[in-house]
Picture 1 (cartoon, rainbow, N blue to C red):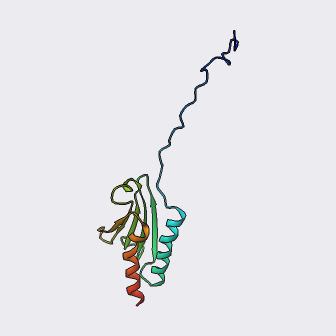
Picture 2: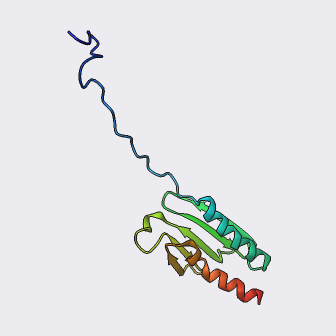
Length: 123
């Protein structure tokens, strides 16, 4: 009898489990995205338009909010929502009143209204 009493030599005695996919606990920005966002934030601060920012990381979305003053509502909010990646795009730019200013798949295109606003201030 092969394998003995412990069944070590028995055929099919080992079971290999499939690796489990862990759910994402929170959405965040990667280094390139955050660099791009903080670059425009720095230029807006230098122009005197923004003074403060906040970041929020949830299970569904990550948001970067820029403020003119700390006690106000955000002047602009950039939101990354990966669940919308295959639909209208995972990036959204919201205005001060909460209106959607731009949506898209590419962060640079979504930030373009802020770039235009910055160019008007510099001129």
